Structure formats: structure tokens, C-alpha cells
Image 1 (cartoon, rainbow, N blue to C red):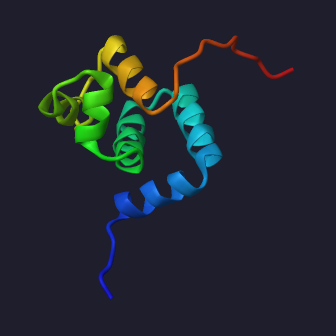
Image 2 (image 1 turned 180 degrees about the horizontal axis):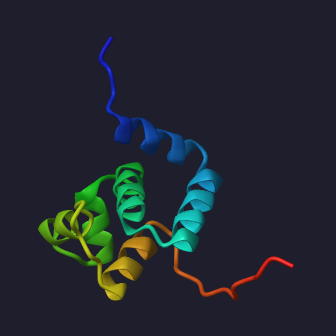
Length: 100
């Protein structure tokens, strides 16, 4: 039996449970951890057909997308928005709710 890598397993999980992916991405955005966001975006890219497919839909060069999602990547807002849109997602602004 061939073993799968962690990212491939997570991509399959997100394909099977898109609500989980949404919860995770919103949680990461709330915490502001860019490294975790890039990991999740790489896994979601696998879930949505791979770098080539997402790059094409986002109108980005595949090499640019690899660099953008690398551990040292720092995506511009326009790139992040394009990547998310290619995945059927978007960024949203919400008020910060302070605990009572």
C-alpha cells in the first residue's frame, strides 16, 4: 500500500468536507498566522486541482503561485483574492467582537 503525504490527505479531507476548510481558513485569518495560512492554501490548492489549475483560474503564472504559497511567500492582496476566487472563496471583513 502506498502511503500519502500529509498535504494530500488534508486536501482529500477538504474536498470531502468543504465546511471544515472554511472554518479553518477563517480561524487562521482571525489569528493572523501567515505561515498557517500558506500551509492551508497549499493544501486547498491540491484539493482544487493543483497549482496549474488554480494558477490558470487565478490568471497567475504557476511559478508565481508556487512562490506565493511557499513557506516564505508573502501574497499581495490581489494575488490572495485571485487564488481564493479560483477556489470559489473570497475574503470578507467582519467586526471584531470583544468578549463581554
